[in-house]
Length: 368
Image (cartoon, rainbow, N blue to C red; front, side, top):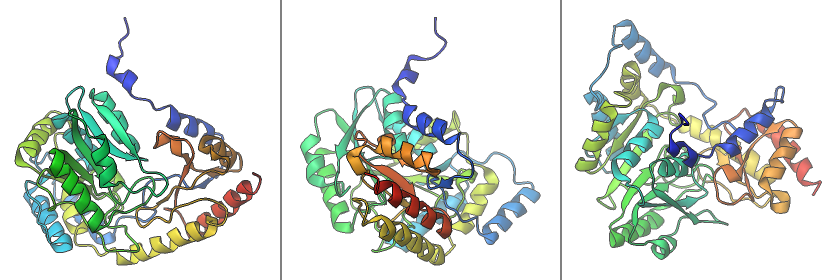
């Protein structure tokens, strides 16, 4: 008898495992793989955290989260988008919010739609819960289109995941595109889960949200990217009351609550101006995109900190192996997609590292 639950066979980590097995042999690599900011938490935010720790605010909080952060999250969306959030709860990052929202809504056999390429956690959590993940091919421009959603909806389709700006492509959906998606969701009575963890990192156009365009929307956002706090595990969710209530019930028996001191600090983080950081990331984006566009077929990312080029020869897995052999660490597109034609670059790295990486990647491309 195996002690391992049958559901674990629904999770495939082989793509990531292979990359890091290869990477283990590298010494001082040119690392273009990390999906976290290369800037630290602002000093003012650190000061709040330290003050709260020293004051003894180290206990559990309400499962919902502290009222100050729930109210500040709603006010943040009202300031930024003109849409105050309803029924806010604090989560242990967006990953925690995804698990809670999926557990509260997905029954075995329910179909969940998302763009392909997709953030790696979507497919595996859906499979773990017995749902059916139906990625919608968005190549070559990586735009999730309402017409493509409409074409694949069946009587079993329940959820649609929207991720803009996107991991791994960096592509952003504009207001018109989001309104069209909201319209098709309304037509089919779909629940929309919008993952907006990168919404503060947009470079060419104003940020926008599907919140307020349609009633049946669960918003997930957090502080890992906007505030450089990935290790602090704080996010927030908002949406229909009956669903958020069930997510809160699940949190009682899983995460219990987000870290208490970090919740206090997150209130301060929502007041932080990241205009300068955005400008720095625009420069980094341009270093990579302008640096590789003549050697690779690549879509210019409008947000997040990723570029998703097509591999020369059409085999992203093989290209990544070549890159790693040349001491450049990147991630194969097959980790994020049903295709294996592309690879992901993260430009959350020092400018000099980016330039070195671009030089090596172009040299390898020239060998094809």
